[in-house]
Length: 133
Image (tube, rainbow, N blue to C red; front, side, top):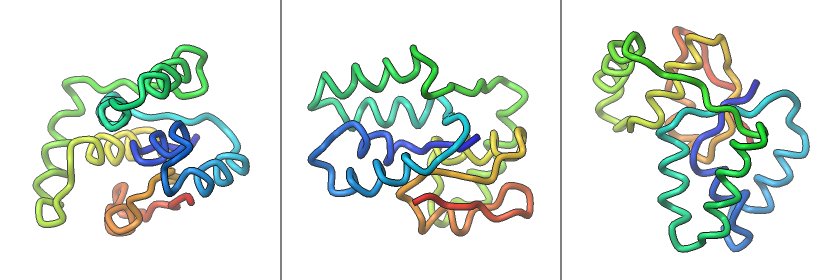
């Protein structure tokens, strides 16, 4: 499984995005399921607000199972809060905190993100992320 941040979702669905070609190429080499949480999906939908067809394609990815939404519940909130406090100086946003939380919970270290700066610092427990692209 590969966790997906908002940036690659936007880049994949908007051909004029400066990272479109790089993300499409990276996606060609990924194996296994793509997964995310609601906050990165909402962020991507917001950023694609100028492109209704791209927003529709984003939700269609979820509908057909190409992008799996991993659940979050109340038991995840304490760890998300702790992560936001730990990385407040970067700062970490809620979308990133939920991805780090599910990475810890699910044992996933591969993340598809354009935010190399932050994800090279974040840790899932004590383990570093494998950042794609």
